[in-house]
Length: 567
Image (cartoon, helix red, strand yellow):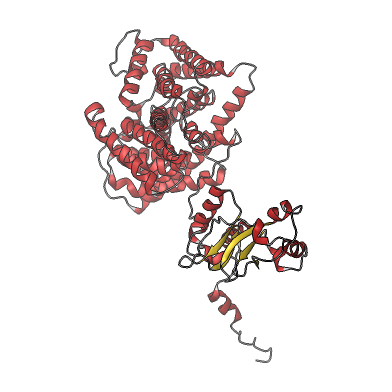
C-alpha cells in the first residue's frame, strides 16, 4: 500500500507539474510554471471536494482523528470506500502541490484495510481495533522505516490500552512491514546524517529551550489550524468547495516560495544536514506553517507528520542560530522531535521517530529533553492536541491519560458488605415486605436481600422489584417462592473489574459473595454502590492533600520556650 501510494503521488506530480505520464521521483520545485503554478493545487482540491461529497466524507482531513473516531465510537468499523478513496485523494492532494505528508493517509488506509480484514471474521470490537491499529502501524512503518516509533504511536495515540493482546499483534505487523519495505522501498534510515558526539550540559540546556519554543509553536499552529477551520465553516458555501479556496493559498505560497509545495522530504533532509540556515530557514518556517494551516483548515486530504518535521526543523535551526550556537543539523533534529511530540502529545513517539529517521543515538538525551519540554508547554496552553481537538468539536471528548484502573487493584473482599441483609427461606412474603418498608430495619439497607436455607447456605436473592411484583400474590407464601435461585455470584479474591463485567454481562446490579471452596457459604454482598465507593476512595487519593506521618511528628514535636526579655 505504501509503495502504491508513493507511486500515485509521483504519477500525479509528473502529470500536474510536468504534463507527462510518468512515475519518476520529481518535486514541484523542479517545474518552472511561474504564476500558472497557482491553479494546479486548486484543480486538485476541486477533485478532492468532489470525491469527498460523492464518495465518502471520511477522506477529509489528515486521517488520524478519523482513525481515533472509528476506534472509540465506530466499533473499529471502517467503510470500504475509505480504504480506496483515502489514498487516491491524498495522492491527488500531494501530487498537485498540497503541503502534506503521506503518513496520515497511509495510517488511515492501513487501518481501513485492517478493519476490513477483521470484518471478514467473527471478532469482537476490541479485536477489530487491534487489527485496525496493526494496519495503521504497518502503514507508518512502510513509509518512514520506523517500526518502533509506529508501535509507540499506536500505544500513545490509538490503542488506549497497554495489553499483550493488542501490543503483540501491532508489534508483529510493524516488523513485518519493516521487513517487506526493504525490497520494495529500501532500508532505513531515510534521512542519513553525520552522527553527533556526546552532548554537553550546555547542549542539553539549549535543547530544553528549543523544546519550549516548539511547545509555543505547537500551540500557535493548533490555534491557527482551527481558526482557519472556523473561518471556512462560516462561508456561505458547501464544504465541497472549501479545499479549492484553501488551495488558492497553497498556490500563492508555492509561487512565492516553491519549497512549501508537496511533501518536501528533500528540505527535511537538508535541515537535518545543516544546509538550510539563516533567512531561508526563517522563510520556510513561516511560509510552510501558514500555508499548511490554511490548507488543513479547509478540510482537504493530507498528513501532518512531514509538515511538522519541516516546521519543527526550521524552528530548531532558527532558535540555535539566535543564540549563536553552531551545529544547525542537531538543532533541526531536536526541533523536529519537539514539534512532533508536543503537537501530537506523543513525546516517546517523537524522540524514537527521529532516532529511527537518523540513527543518531547520541542525540537521544537532547531529544528527550526537548519533547518533554514541548509537552509541558502544550499541556498548559491547550486542553487537547491538534488530533483530538477535531473530535472534541464534534462533541467527542477523548482522555488519553494512561493510569492503573482502581477496579483492577481492589478485590471484592476489600469492599463488600460483610454483614449483608439476609432472611430465612421460610419467612412469609408479608413479613419481608413490612420490614423492607421500615427505614430502621436492616433489610431496608440494600436493594436486594439474600435468602438462606435452614443450614444458613445461600438459597436465593430477592430484590425490591421482586417484592413489588409479588404484591398481588399470596402474602403468606414463603419468600423463597419469589426469589431468584439461579444465582450469579462473586468471590472475595476476584477483582472489582471482573465483578463489574459479570454484572454488565448478566444485566444485574448486585452479587452475593460466597466462599469459592463452599459455594453455599455467604461471605458478603457486592452492589454497584460498593464499586462506586472504591472509585471514590481512589479519587480522594488523587485530590486530598495531607501531611504524612513524618510531617505530623515534626509539627507535634514540642518547641523550646522563647527566651524571656530579662535573659
